[in-house]
Length: 365
View 1: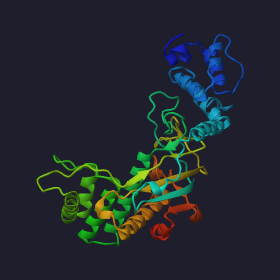
View 2: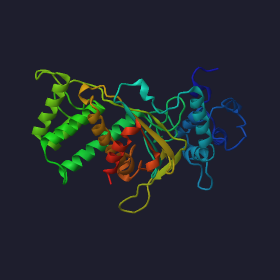
View 3: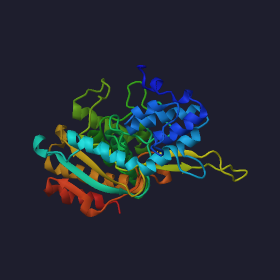
View 4: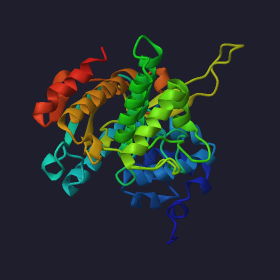
C-alpha cells in the first residue's frame, strides 16, 4: 500500500473509460465499479471521494467531473444535488455528539458588563467565499471547516465583515448629512478600535491600509485626536509607537446545512456571446444560519454600564447593516451574502440590554 492518499488512488493515471465509470462511482451516481479499478470501493467517506474526483482537473474528463454532460447532471453537481445535504447532516451530527458545535455563551463565566447577541438569519442571496484548499475539482470552492468539511463563516470572516460595515457607516455619516465634528469622528473610531483591536496599517514606518484610509476620510485633526485617545488609554508616551491590542468582541463560527453551485458566464463585449463559464460553490439562498457574538469589556475605559449600552447600540446598528444591506463573504458588491432577519430571531443577554440593542438595530432603517 502506498503511503500517500492520492497516489493510492491515481484517477488521473487511469484510461479514459475507467475515469468515466470512476467519476460516476465516486459521486455515488452509479453502483457499478470500474472494471479494472475495484479499489475505490474501499473509500467510504464522501469527502475522500471528492478528493479523488479532484484529480480529474488534469484529465480530459474535467467538465464531466464538475457538471456532468449537457444531457445529464453528473460529477460534483450530481453529488451536491443528491447527496450533499445528507453528508452535511451526518457531519453536523458528529459535531453535536462530540459537544463542539457552537452554543450561546454562558455570561456567568465572564466579567460584569459582558453581553452576547445571537441572530438567526435566512440568506436572501447565496453566500460565496473562497476556501484555502490547494487541490479541488472547482477553482472556487466555498470555505469549509477544516475537519468536518461543513460550509461555514469563520470568526475572522465575521470580524472583518462587521468592521467593514461599521467603517462604511461611519464614512457615510461623515460624508453625508451627518456629523462633521473631528472629536465625534475620532471618538467613534476609538470605540471601534477597542471593539475590534488595532487598525491594520498602523505602523511606525508608514501608515497604510485601513489606518491611512480613515486618516484621509476624517482629516488630520480627527486622526490626531484618535491617536491621542489610544495613547491615553494604554498610557503610551508620544515617543513610542501605538500598541497592537486585541478588541472586546469575540465571534463564533456559523455553520450551514446546505451547499449549492453558482455559474457566472462572462460575455464578450464585441460578440455578446458567453465565454467559458465560471463555477462557484455556494451556500444557496433560503439557507438558515446563526450568528453569535460575545462582548467582554476587558478595556478599563469601557467599564461603565452606560458605555456598555452605547457600544451595544453601535454594534446593533453595524450588525443590521452587515447582514441586511452590505452582505458578508465574497462578491458582496454583486448582492451576494445578504440575509433577512426577523425581530423574533434576535436574542440578547442580559435581557435588560435587549432594548438598547434593538434601538441601535432600528436606526438602520
